[in-house]
Image (cartoon, rainbow over all chains, first blue to last red):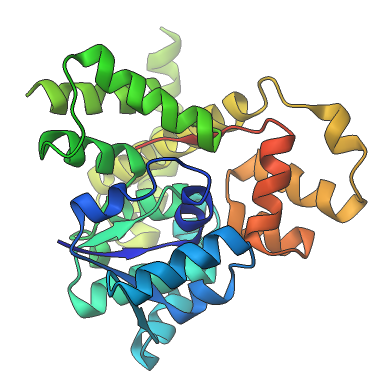
Amino acid sequence: MKGIINTCFLVDRADYKRRDLLKDVFDEVILLSEIEKEISDQKARKNIRNWLEEEFMKFIRPSQRDINDAVELTKNSYLSTLIGEIHYADALIMAHAKNTGIKNVISEDHAVIHLPQHHPPYKDIVVLTAGDIILHAVKGGNIKVESVDDFVNILDEYQRETKRRYSTPFIQKLIKSYEG
Amino acid sequence: MATKRNNVSLAPDLEFISKDMGLDVETITEKAIREFIARYKLEKIRKEMRENVNWEYISKLPKRLQKGLFYLLDTGNMHIAADNAGVPIDVINVHRKKADIFLVVEK
């Protein structure tokens, strides 16, 4: 599986003890040059360097078409009303996913998560949060889990370490997928 | 009774918008419901993020960083919050964590 990664994810990942989880789920992760520029944290940069050396991560410059689409997305006031302001870097990731046909985007940004629901040109993009990736890893047997409680504990651990909080309906969705 | 009265008062507006936009009433209604749900979700995120925030820590930060964190609390958007604070995204993330701002992820 191939996925395009965004900044928030990389930055938080540096503090998360299961940061290599991505490798269990993805064969290759794309990092856009605009995203790389935003990261100054040494731990996160070291992480990126390692992944690039291991050829798990690929560094790509966005095309002119990606740039044009991203600019258009950030200017779309109807979307902003629905999902909040979209940052250029996030828009660029979505535009690149749409234009290259890479279906998976790894992000926990509200605007990115909700864009496919509200903007038909982006409807085929699947946005994966850390919760989804943990679920994939558990289902694929990369993380050993005995019960629902174990699974919930792993989700709690991520939320605690990265200071993120998953909404109750989202956690319920993840548990349902785990059980199913 | 009140609902019935409201429906009656909405009808002329709906008819006008329908003609003006060239969309049927069902499409407009669906759009309105979508907007309502999206706004509700954003509002809920906003409320949850304000729980247990370390306001004392925020008050000691420079004004620009405070502005960035306030934007983050309003929208949950770390990218634009970092732009507003004039710092890289990982720097605002460090202050977010120190200020006990939990980013709410809703899917």
